[in-house]
Amino acid sequence: MSLWLTHPLLLPSLIVGVTIVLWATSLLPEFITALLFFTAAMAARIAPPEAIFGGFASSAFWLVFSGFVLGVAIRKTGLADRAARSLSAKLTDSWMLMVASVVLLSYALAFVMPSNMGRIALLMPIVAAMAKRAGIADGSRAWFGLALAVGFGTFQLSATILPANVPNLVMSGAAEGSYGIHLNYVPYLLLHTPVLGILKGLILIGLICWLFPGSPKPPKDRAPSEPMGRDEKRLAWLLALVLGMWVTESWHGVGPAWTGLAASVIVMLPRVGFITGDEFSAGVNMRTCIYVAGILGLAIVVTQTGIGAAVGEALLRIMPLDADRPFTSFLALTGITTALNFIMTANGVPALYTTLAQSFSDATGFPLLSVIMIQVLGYSTPLLPYQASPIVVAMGLGKVPARAGMMLCLALAIATYLVLLPLDYLWFSVLGKV
Image (cartoon, rainbow, N blue to C red; front, side, top):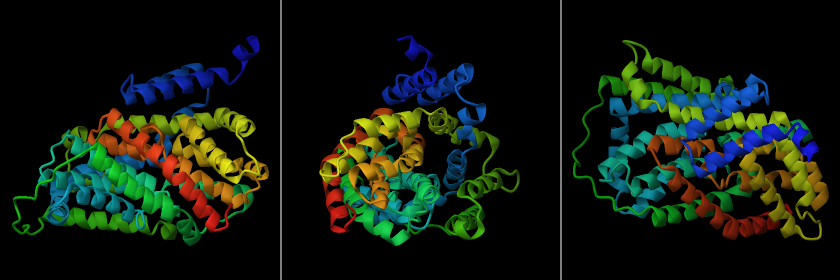
């Protein structure tokens, strides 16, 4: 017993475990739990400050921040309402059509825009305005469904597009750095899109319509829109420039976070921008920003302290990996990813799992590339919202209660593991990957 009490991972594991439990149960507001994590981690010195507060240095944090700022500007200038006006005239005839349109738009945008946070920032004010025009009130179950459609459609479905989210990029970098394997866009798309893109999208639409029913009304005001004002035109040109920079990141090398941050500064400049200091204070949800920084910081701490590696090695020993039972091995590898998601969150899972992939390949007899690819189903299917920061951001922007997000997370995870996991295994088999 005394050995356990003196183990170097005991205190870090205790702090990380309590933080995860508080986030999972929502016993405290999420941002307060994040602040408690920062306090306890620094007081106990479980990791260097640059690791504990590493979330604030992450590009994901600044994408969240700039997304809030740009969202305020899009709403204030009337661009959101203009876009919603053009969409609502065609997409509000039925609730299923409305939900399906939002999910499809979230997914389609992932092909041209590389940032989950950026896509959410762009879509949320437009979807909010569209909902308002269709008679869906803020705070209603129907609105929660639409906000979650943006978050889940953006994060979960974009996992099928290689450069479209952070976990994919982490996995790609880890595979290249550890094994010299370069992942290609089209084979990756072919492997994951049929099951984790199309079928999962259909299940997501059905679950939202069932769990969050709504009755959109055709907009009463069908008069043609007025010409764009000066501020609308200026902001539209700025957003077009930002979108162009995001799409061409591979050419110029400037990350989406820093492009978004530059645009955020411009929209806040006196006499040049669009929003005042008071509007910034009212519109930018710092609670969610702190929460996201806490999630990212926790993932860094788990990696640097060795908690993640210890858990990964333990899972390797206890999971039923057997070359003679390929489906059981496929199920076990997905289970390992799901378990790691609880302590490392989606952004951190690929960094650890991929480094262990050769051991998993030896134990299962699967090709190394296939073992690396199997993790996508696991990290793209969070059981709780905190495991995927883009979903947290969408919930923050839409003021969605934790219970609603948790309910959809669990429902979609159950459907994924019962229905999509066997189909994913069959698709891997058809393509000769297992």
